[in-house]
Amino acid sequence: MTTLSTILRDADPTAHETRSPQARALTRARVMSLPASANTQRAFSRRQAFAMAAVLGAIAVGAGVFGWRQASVDVAAMRFEARLAESNETILANRDIQTARMVTLHDRDRSGNTSSTFGVELTFTSEGAEKMRRATEEHIGEHLQLMIDGEVVMAPLIRGAISSSAMLSGNYTWEQASRIVDGLLKGKLELRNDK
Amino acid sequence: MSSPTERLSLIFDTHEDKLYRLARRLTRSAEEAEDLLQDTFVKAAGALGSIPDGTPKEEAWLVRVLINTQRDHWRKATVRKRAAPIAPALTALPASTAETALIAKRAVWAALDTLTPRRRAILVLSELEGLAPDAIASLVGGTVVTVRWHLSIGRRELRCALASHLGEKR
Image (tube, rainbow over the protein chains, first blue to last red):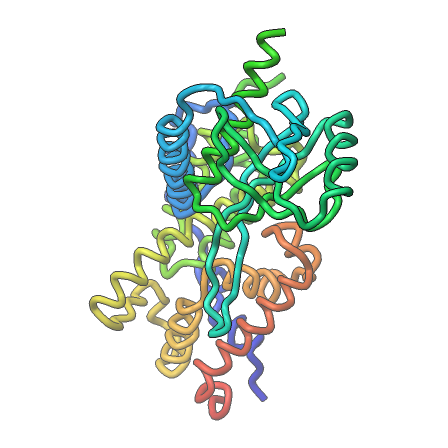
């Protein structure tokens, strides 16, 4: 009965040949002639290095495109205001915003196609959150008007009481959403500088 | 504190024998094995700072580098092989062995050549060096489960390739 192990052992080259001392000495001499360096370097294979270069490249390109789009949008600080459409009552201003960021919303229609739109997620300062909660609680079903530099950029429907954070799910395009985020953050920054 | 050159010399003398044996079992000839060993120490010489202290850790580092180096060679060779198929150049085997045994060995080494270097190394360390899966895992990196998986797949691949030899010879 021949097993795989015996076949492998029979074919083992180190069992049949002895290493030539000259070859060993030559290898040692070559290695010892190298400039030894105490550098730290991870033992990356060439393939891994390529993969990393590719990933870094993609990130750089992405960041470049993002930066460019940011720059083309991000021109000046914008005054932010949130008010109730019905009563024109102003609820929040720039100082009430804690953070603003863009979020991707995924939708699936009846035939199963998915599409992505963008929304803006806002979080409010504790003071702003309390003002917002009070105002929206009483006005569910009405529209909120978000204004940037006195212009209504969107008028989302108030679906429930909003307090510390709000998702503005208006099915915006990337440009619209990013413009809103920029406006909100810039305005907040400017306000802080004014203080 | 030893100088980088002293450390390189120490590392070479400590691990060279074992590494040569592994290199020889991953390659087709003694010359290729010497080259592979040399390439491994070239990398070690350039990065002594990243070799961890302690003999077992040093060995594991060197074994991994050796396998990765061989993998790069192997990939290039595989691409070449795809362009010009199958010419097993196994001239390094001793001519004194009986012809049937020689043919069997050629078949074994041709079959081993189809394994990825990492899998081949794991198989060789287990079958020829007699190491347990956990010892192999700490040497080549990865988990014991991964090592067992490589062993099982590697054995199956070899059995398929060597079906005729396993069945009839001896």
